[in-house]
Image (cartoon, rainbow, N blue to C red):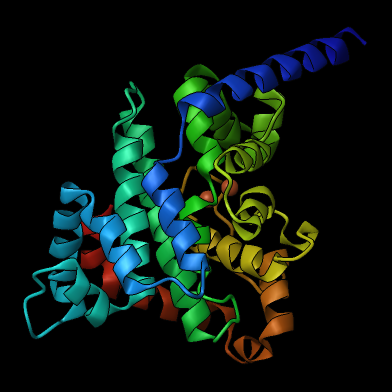
Length: 298
Ligand SMILES: [Fe+2]
Ligand SMILES: [Fe+2]
C-alpha cells in the first residue's frame, strides 16, 4: 500500500515536472511552420522558399547538403528555389526538419551531450531506415515515415535532459535485468518515454499521425488510425538497434513474428515472400550505402 502510494506520488511529481518542462523544450517555431506547410496540399514553392530564406544559416546548410555527392546533381545548387526544383518539396522538407531539430537538440545546455548525440544519431537512422523500408516494399505510409522516425523517441529527450540520474538507472536496469526500456522507465520513474513523447508532441501541436507514433511505436496495434506507420517505424527501430544505432534497448532478431512486422505483412504480404534475414540484409546494405550522406545529418 505504502509502495503504491509512493509510486503514485512520484508519478504525480513527474507529471508536474513534465508540464513545466514542456515549456522549456520548445519545438523550433520554423519547424512547426514547415510541417504545417508540408501537410497543406496547396503550399507553394514560394512560401517554402521564403520560410527557409528567412534564416541564412539554415539556407547555407540546406545548400551544402543539396550539393553533397549523395544526390549526384550535375549542376551546383546555388539557391533555395533551385534546390526545391531539383530535389522536390518533400526532400527539402525532410532536410530542413532534420537540420533544425539537430541544432535545437545540440544547443541544449546539457551535461548529457553524449546521450543526446546518441539519441540524435538513432533518430536520423530510424528515419532513414523507415523510408528505405517503406520504399522497398511500397508500404502505403504516405511519405510520413521519415518524419515519424525522426520524432518517435523524443520522449527520451526529456528523460535524458531533465532526469539524467534516473536515465542512468534506467540504462543499467535494462542491461542488468534484461528488461525492455519501457519496463525499466516505469519502474524507475513511473512513466514511459512513449507517454512523455505523447505529451510533448501535443504541446508541440504535431499532426495526429506523429503523436500516435510517439505514443504507440512499441505497441503499434494499439494505434487507432496509424498502426501501419507505427509498425514501419518500430521495425526500423529494431533494425537500428541491431546495427549499432540503437538507444540501449534489448537487441531482438528481426522475425516476422513480431507485432510490428505482422502489421506490415497484413498490408503488404509480398514482404513475407522473402526470408526475414534477407529483408534485414537488403535493408542493411541500402542503409550502409546512404551512410556517408546520413553522417552529414548526424
Ligand atoms: Fe522508443
Ligand atoms: Fe527508438
